[in-house]
Image 1 (tube, one colour):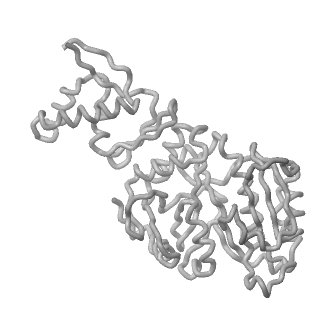
Image 2 (cartoon, chains in turn orange, red):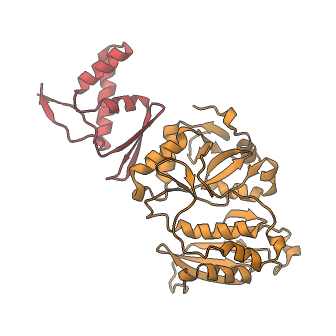
Image 3 (tube, rainbow over the protein chains, first blue to last red):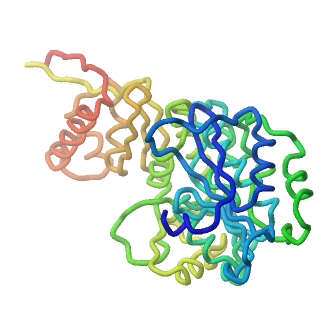
Length: 286
Length: 94
């Protein structure tokens, strides 16, 4: 965390959402102003205690920082010290930050099943990856693109319990509908360079599901049984208690037509190559 | 002397994929993953057969001696019972 502390934060605000208290700091006063406006219903005072609350840090290259020193133009979203999203597009960053707030509203939700899994893609193959892989993909930046990969914009996804399809988040966070456009409009257009990240905007199926399992595998991609994949995903579901048995059925539906794998990686290059090698035609079900 | 006829709880969510079952117990909030053998035995736990009868049925289907099957079936049923996946069993006179 100390390494992050030197990044030149100019604003820090506190919010309450879904029973959680959250701090957000940024290198950009404009971003800070925008977030306070977008989440006006949730702004609160800094708590007067010693509890370690969730902290999001948003590095924004809005020209107010010494770019010579920084040497890169990516906007970065950190959760603690964990970089979740790196993007050249401020619209992606704005949406990713708002969706992190939406996550705090998922735990008691019973209409959709929420999983700590992110949607990435290799060409036209949609890959559901465990959230723990996000920092590796984020750090890979342009290298991931050279492998034909599109990184996730969200660190969690919603499942329709009836169909097992990935569907847009539906948490009811109160945000003005034009929030993202307002953010982009408040900053120079060059901060909104095209930089595709995946968000689920319409129902979609996952072609491949990777589960976060700690088995004694060698590095690489390993086939998993669908039932084991269901168990791994269900045990990590954000709202299993609220959705109960229908979560299990939805996850079973999700994996029923997907290739299921565990991934173990030692180098980012190896991980990127493994993800790039996944394709529907190359599926080898266990 | 009495025997029991194991019966799976009816309030469990059970999904079966490629011959393996995932079971969710909403009461305890527990998830269980059964391999293919345990899934077959769990499916036979419908309250109509004793372990001996279940073993005979499996042995017949696999063409192996019942005495080879029964200890394994008994172990799996014991595990299912300890995991709380079976109803309180009725004792039936032998």
